[in-house]
Length: 171
Image (cartoon, rainbow, N blue to C red; front, side):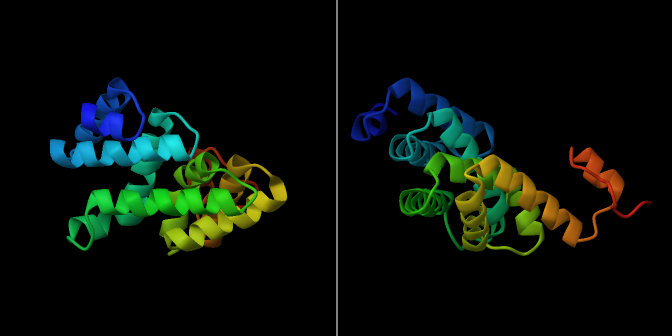
């Protein structure tokens, strides 16, 4: 943890806490340390806290990469690196931030993946909405609602997700 921390100008405590979180999620300690390194890189390049970076990476990995990781198509560390690259790239090129894009994916990712959107498509949707609204959280909430409604989600399920169910299918 100390070597990883010094290599990316992070603290040993931050990397250790992140590795512990990844380990708690079921990753082997060697994988958890590699994932913590990606969290630390994301936190530095994306100008966010390592705890937020770890949460965003966790949500994105689980939503978009869990099957590929389970099937051995990609390692968790490589998937995390790919996610960090995409979040930072979008944050640098558009009216958003890497942290904001991560928060948007965390908030809307499960609904967007259920609607068969890839990570790239989901990032594009959040980016386009954020360009207009200037708020990743509002954009993610709107995309989650739209996705659920397009798939015919019933009023009860919308209410359980904390969304407005007016006009939705009643059970």
